[in-house]
Length: 67
Image (cartoon, rainbow, N blue to C red; front, side, top):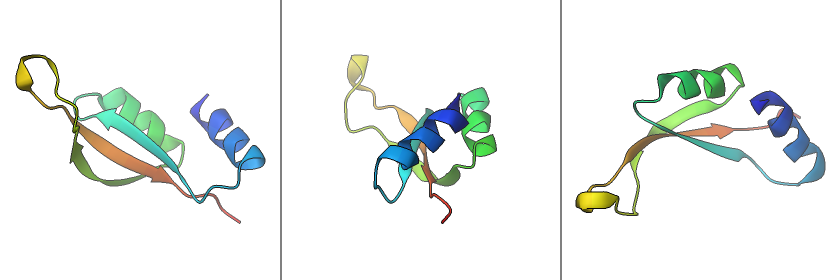
C-alpha cells in the first residue's frame, strides 16, 4: 500500500519529495518505509507536547522520485 500511494502522489502532484515519519519504537513501520524506497534522514523530536509534558521522538524519512 505504501508503494502504491507513493507512486500515485508523484503521478498527480509536482512535488520534490514525500516525507514519512515513524515512532522510534515502531520497527515494523520503519521497515515498511525502507522497503518502499524511503531514505532515513535523521531522528527528530515532536514540537507538540504529549500528555504529562513529554515530547515524542520519531524517525524522519524522505522519498525522492526517480526521473
